[in-house]
Image (cartoon, rainbow, N blue to C red; front, top):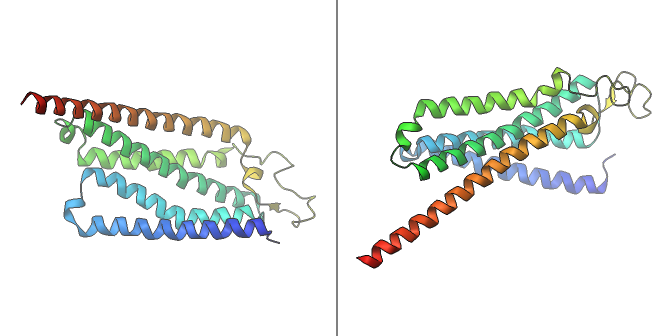
Length: 217
């Protein structure tokens, strides 16, 4: 039985999913139609848009399902949880790639076209998705609660039949894994913040320099 607070959560998730899918489809469509937008930078943007479309179409419905605690086989529930991790991780890596690309473009504008080429950008996008899959599927390789009878095959549960478990994210993915992943994501966010700070300082420096040049002229 779905509770009232879960109804609010589901409605909000559905609204977010619709906005995410609609907005990012428009982004991909605009890049596809306009050849001027088909740049190396927008390759990272399209990668982020594709990841967010997948989040809206697949990850959010899975998140809604897993939040209700429906009865499922342990491996099936674990796969849903891992799929959520893969898609959210791909968005994080895509944001990191965009930040790094913009940092290089601002710090070394004259060398940017030689450093960030189309082939390298495609390789970076592929690497981002490969790492996302590797990190997201780690719980399937053993970092899960399958060996714990409390969260694994919950045969004594009065809610689910024999051989099935109440499918909850925290019931299949270990807390230790989430701590490691949170630390990993924290490092990525710190890198994003540092890149943003470097870009801000550089922009301020350029603005001051241009103002001095105008003053002398």
